[in-house]
Image 1 (cartoon, rainbow, N blue to C red):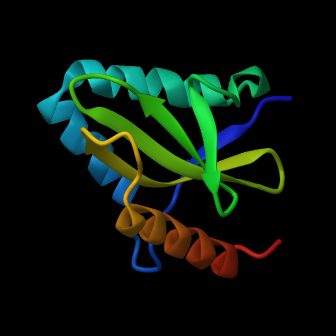
Image 2 (cartoon, rainbow, N blue to C red):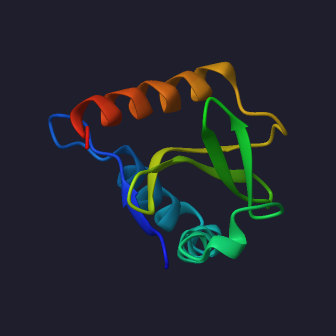
Length: 117
């Protein structure tokens, strides 16, 4: 069985991941294409490990594409074979900043509160 990949939306309907991807498409179409391919691969459970994906703590995972800037999409797993993408970042750092982890965790908690199964 394959997973589905969904994008987090705020209560007001804003979609930070879609905004991130739209910006990436404008600034770096090659990295955009690599991230979309990575998201497609996540649907298949054999890709839930390095180098494409790895756990980062707090039941969060990262999908990573390495280029001039590291491009990451942070996500978590939800019931029903679902992957919820909550945050996107680009930077030169090898580590994910505390601020970005916090944003991802807050969005995860918000999603879980509003989507209790």
